[in-house]
View (spheres, rainbow, N blue to C red):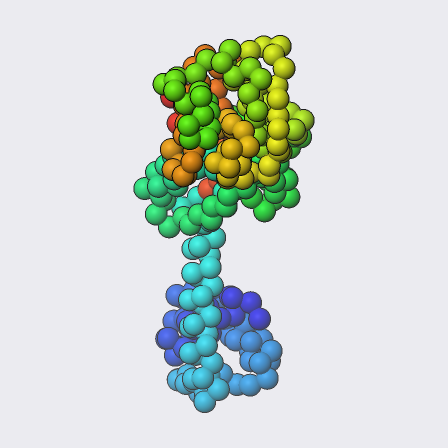
Length: 296
């Protein structure tokens, strides 16, 4: 059964006259009659009783009428949704984000601003590390990632810097460096650093090296899986940790923060996505982010 059979049936059911229904459909009356007969043959039941001057629905035809109308309505709704999705008016976008990008405000900003013009678009945002985001982008289970800016993008992915934040140092309360309002890289030589495991990954420059003098030796006393583990270690007196400005706003008993001036670079976050992304909705979202990136 095809949708045209449904439309032909409904036209005859509405008009109860084959010639008028054929004129409404802009097809020949014999063609319409043949199509209705084909539908009846497919169903194995008569839908209309035909007399010389009248047409009436059979019992089966009256029951089939309700289902036919509902089916056509669902088909038209599906077509409308498909067209709107093709235009980027509705749909869903899945985001991955590192915590520093989220707390920095770029992720909430991107969602709220995009939904101003696309109110029927839904978002699913997940906190994920940079490497995990790259993997899921390539697998197609993630649409756009907010990651630490890599030295280079994996094959198949591309992106641009969307946010820049200065570095701060997290240290135990009462730590000697806490006496300063602002720190210089020379002051951090030989300090015991707690560093995330991510910094050991190839292609992601070390935050610790960014806040220490070039060529200086770095003392890393512990490596932890995430920034929260680093802050817990700091609170316990294990060492100090480098954080972004946004994460330096997180209150944690036993931890204080000081900005690091004249670091060799900032903490850059990138919007990452598939090269040659085919989906109009995602392309529109990326275009909005690109406009924002030009203001950096």
